[in-house]
Image 1 (tube, one colour):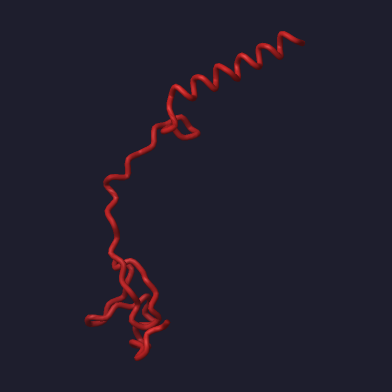
Image 2 (image 1 turned 180 degrees about the vertical axis):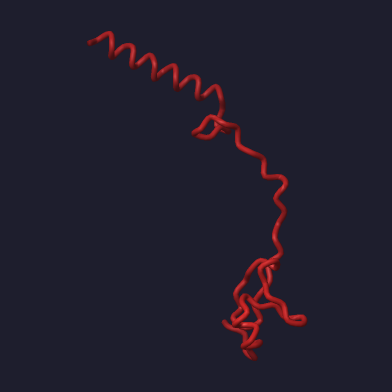
Length: 83
């Protein structure tokens, strides 16, 4: 029984040593993290009706104004912007 315990302690020590030598960059799966250098920032716009900020690609346009949904586009802009 004592040899089993010694073997377990040695195995944990070796596993810890190997994981530290690999470095902190690696995830739980052991794979190197992927570089997200290709991701570009997204332009954010504000809904003319409710003031919600959303991605410009998701906005609904009418003239020069942008809205978060078709329902807000139909309601039109608010004279007083939300606080």
